[in-house]
Amino acid sequence: MRRKYIIAVIVVFIAIAAGCGAKTYDTQSKTEDMEQDSLQLETGVSESVKETEPERETEAESETESETEAESETESEAEPETEAESETERETEAEPETEPEPETESEPDVPSKPENAEDIYTYRDLNQTMWATGSVNVRNLPGKEGKKLGVLKSGEEIRATGQCNETGWYRVIYKEQTGYVSNKYLTDKKPKEEWPEITANDIFIPELNADSPVIVIDAGHQEFTNKEEEPIGPGAFVTKKKVSRGTKGCVSGWWEYELNLVVAMKLKTELTARGYQVVMIRETHEINISNSERAKVANNVQADAFIRIHANGSTDSSVQGAFTICQTPDNPYIGDKYESYRKLADCIIDEFALSTGCIKKEVMETDTMSGINWAQVPTTILEMGFMTNPEEDALMATEEYQDKMVEGIANGVDRFLDN
Image (cartoon, rainbow, N blue to C red; front, side, top):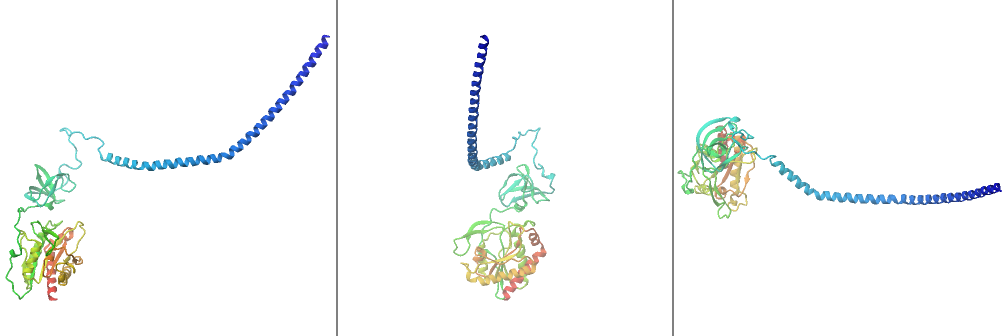
């Protein structure tokens, strides 16, 4: 009985086990089916995602580009700040990195250039009183690179103790210290406060006759500068300074008024030797006569020719050459006399260039010259050369070249009157 019971239990157990196995298989199968469906779903979703991802990447790239453009605009707007920073940097560079320490007797400042100019320059010793010909700087070195110590006023007196062999500048005693002044602005001639102004009627006129031509010579400029104004022509509203001292030689050191008189006096001698009657506007530097009054002298003696002797100047030291000046055909004062004035100008410059071998420039026609506009007789201004050109300035200061210039001018007068 017990054995049957045991067998029955075993059979029941086996049956139960078999039923559980079937359910397990179904569960596993259903699980596998669900997993397969899930896999297919995931695969479909994955493929869908893959199809949409490029579009998202494109949008992302677009956003990135937008951000890049925004950054670019920001950088563009930031450029002015960069320039401002650059200016700040330049200002910073210009400022000393450290504040200079106060000067002490034990630790003096070391100058960037020699404190004593005798250390690098040589000098010719002088002990001479000189006067400033205009407002001029006093420096601590004999050149424009020197530090400015002060200013001399026109006509101010100063003691010169030497002259620099390298630059020509004068060494002077300025406020109990050594200073240096350009030689172009100091003279050993004491200036007069003022020369009384004279007119054409005050000029000496020699006895003249009708047998030979009369030539009036004007040594242009004068030592005294008359800054008063006068009309540039009869009835003109435009005015100019009455007269000045002219330019100055860069090598010779001569003022133009000095060179002009030297040549004018030589020309007087030459023309007189050729049989002309000569009237001189001036034979001294100590005179004060305006350009219009000079022209009136030529008018008063009914001159056959009025020759005005000048030299030129330029800010460009390479410029050189000679030329003459006359009015234009449309000159409002003497336009009807153009042909004779132009003829004189042509004759003078042609013969001058032929005699000297100088560079010949074209005749200048202008209506701005008071000394021409006021003249009623054939007139020309001769610009002999440029005193600001080292070669021409040195040449015009020599006796030999002066004689050539005079010969050329006299030949020009001959040619003008012979025709």
